[in-house]
Structures are given as C-alpha cells and as structure tokens.
Image 1 (cartoon, one colour):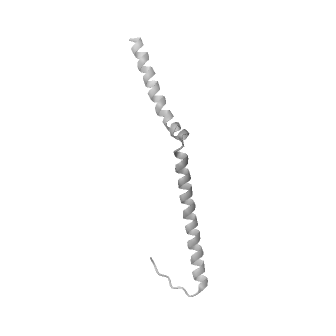
Image 2: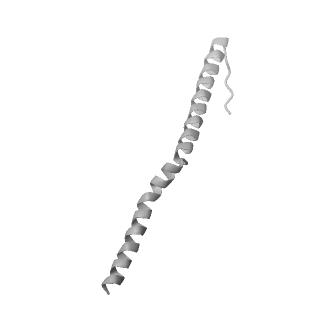
Image 3: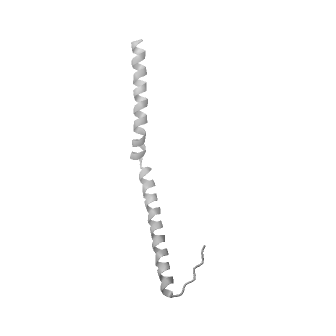
Length: 71
C-alpha cells in the first residue's frame, strides 16, 4: 500500500469519501452477484436450460422407435 502524505484535513476527508464510495460500489456488486446467482438457481431457470437437452433426447428416442418399426 502506498502511503500518502496529507497536508490538510480536506485531503483526508476527500480520500475517505472516495474510499467510502468505492466500498459501497463493491457492496452493490456483491449484492447483484448474489441476486443473479439466486435467479440462476430457481427451478424454472434450471429446467429451462435443460429443455433443449431433453428435447434432443426425446427426439432421438422417438426416431429410434420409428426406425425399429420400419425394419
């Protein structure tokens, strides 16, 4: 960490405000990340992402049954 030499309380207050705002921004980023993670883990979202895979499996099973009947 770089040590800064301050010449006035005004400079210290300015840096403290900046640090406080940076901390608040980081807290909001964490809150958003938690919220996004919660949304991704909703059952409807999980099933929604599995739907294309399930469709492919179902289509391949149906195709196999149809091919067996044709033989």
